[in-house]
Amino acid sequence: MILRTIVSWGWSPILITAVAVIGYLYDWPIEAVAPALGVILVIGLAVVVAGAGEREWERSSLRLKELAGYFNRRFAGDSSLSIFTIIETVFNVDNPKLWDWARACDMSRRIFNTWCGSFISRVESDVRTRRLPVYLRTYLNELWLINNHYYEFVEQFYEVAEKVEIPQETVDQYNRFVMEYNAFVQSFQESISELKKIARTEIEPPSVKLAKELSGVKSVPATHEEEKKPSPTTEHKGYYL
Image 1 (cartoon, one colour):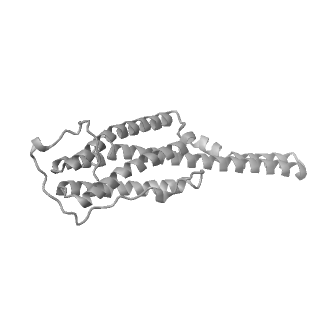
Image 2: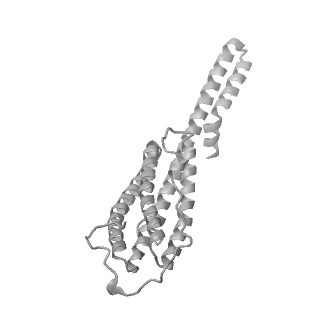
Image 3: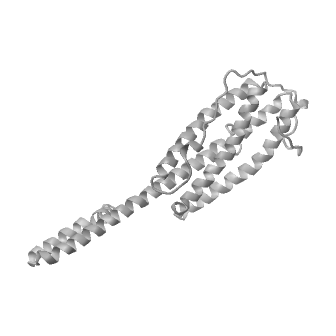
């Protein structure tokens, strides 16, 4: 392992030294040795620069994979911090219009989770085949789109919570979500900034927005009257206005 590292990183200085020593022992003219040493040095520097760029791509790819996996694990599926799980709690509020909006969100949740699952599967497959750096920009754009669509539901819930009394448990659950989601957003913004240094991307860090925390919101205790709670699987669609 050590020998391979030395050869990988230091083959140019080793070769230059060897040529210089051989030239000295055999009294080669400096006019013949100097150009050869210069060519070896230039090639060595080019290889080092190319290797550094490749490692930067691999590092960015790994970080993107980690961010995508974290998002899927913490904010999608059946996670308690999923915005869709939080939206589902509003069925405890006696407000039929609010139920219509929550039902529509539940339908969107299934589509969104399928999208996230497919995305993670493709990323992990390309990691195993070492093709992730090739599609790095593509996956960055897709994760950005996934997050933007997700943020729309976060923003909708925030607007609803400002207008309608919701259970205190839901408020607390949402604020816990905001803390963790905003930490993810900051990491995502940093990754975009770093990637812009090595690749052309039109995505700007501020386009990944922070969620707003609820404060001073009137809340009501959750009701446990199951006969009033509608089923989220009802096909009726609607949006809360």
